[in-house]
Length: 270
Image (cartoon, rainbow, N blue to C red):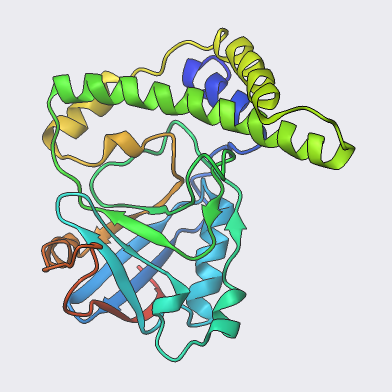
């Protein structure tokens, strides 16, 4: 992994965020999501243990029971886990679910059709790309041609550089606030820009591997989300249910007009 250009790039961005894959002999965890549109069975990945264990804990405590898929975009993804959409949960109770999980982004996990990944806040306030503690999405996606994938490569590299800038900007703002430094906002941004330039000058651009391009061309997914969100599982049964949910009528906020509910989430055996 150390020889990988992409891994080097993100070791710089997220020191300590990358987690090596666990032993393949480790027992896999399967979770059944019973919805009012049908059942979806997912496999949690041992190579993202922080997200795996967090999701298992939420499932075992019943957090996902009676929660909504609150954001749905056809040919893209379906998203659930917002505590404010859980029936019979008040503001005081839901507040304890507003937490983050450290990013576990690595090159072996990408946004092919059917993966499950963690939602998060944007780079401007979250340059470490830490995940929402409870919100996740399942990729429906679509297929892409090479011209589109070339454009996505450019966009991914731009977001990498932007995340580096926000990392230094956040750190310098915190330092100035704590020390009582008299630096102006413009001076803080200039300092962050210099550090950003020095770091990205040593990076080589991210390139989508040909094997991955073939999957995006033939099977589909959401390649523009690669290296930005933690993938921690995959659907092994029920993609037709994911498609049905993704196709429902939505309002101008991408919220389903008809409620799409996770009736129950439970750990199951193979």
